[in-house]
Length: 160
Image (cartoon, rainbow, N blue to C red):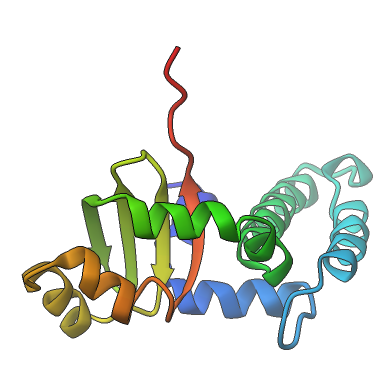
């Protein structure tokens, strides 16, 4: 199993904390600082800098973690969320929940516009209330969609 697959299975809140620690982020994510740190880490761990195969292998694992962590933190940063807020509000208010998936503390919701969002920290009890609600859309708006850290995980497919 690849390191990436192992990273992805970690409980999501722990994943956020680990990535913030990797990039020395405390509190809110600043994209400019994150990018500077990212560039430094990529230079430090680039596999071509290492001569021995075992060192290259470690560097490949680290660089993959750095790249994944960077993209993940960018996706949950306040700047990214602010830039996409109008689209997000449209999705959660004008479209219905089409599908959902819950594992550990991660809730993934797909809407009828084709967009999919991940919500971090949603426990089993709240998930149970969500799927058993009279209106999962209203319950989601009141208790999840505007209350938990989220990121867009899949964009709507463009129809030709």
